[in-house]
Length: 118
Image 1 (cartoon, rainbow, N blue to C red):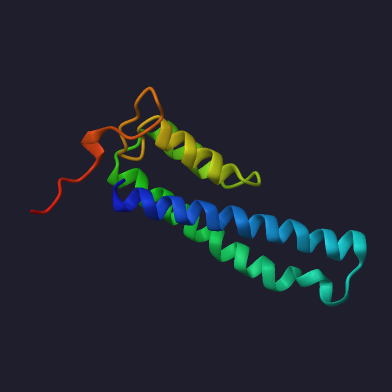
Image 2 (cartoon, rainbow, N blue to C red; image 1 turned 45 degrees about the vertical axis):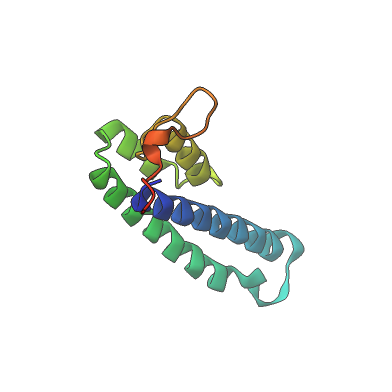
């Protein structure tokens, strides 16, 4: 897997985790009425940073692996629903849009394995 694809995966997962944490914090604040606003200000800031990093990473990845405009927009929109970034990342890998050649078995082809150093 190319380095840009690995980085995209890490950022997509981090964005989804921070989204989930924000949803939990908002539940604590508005439903449970927890003290300290349920952590929303802190978790909100973390998610904001994660969201921004995901958007920037999506744009860099789109340029490096030459996504068409439709795929790029889909990647950006995937940051809105919870876990959308993970769903998009899995789809992009499965369809070869992250520089990984898909095979029938779902495994990467030998073309994706770098040659060993002898």
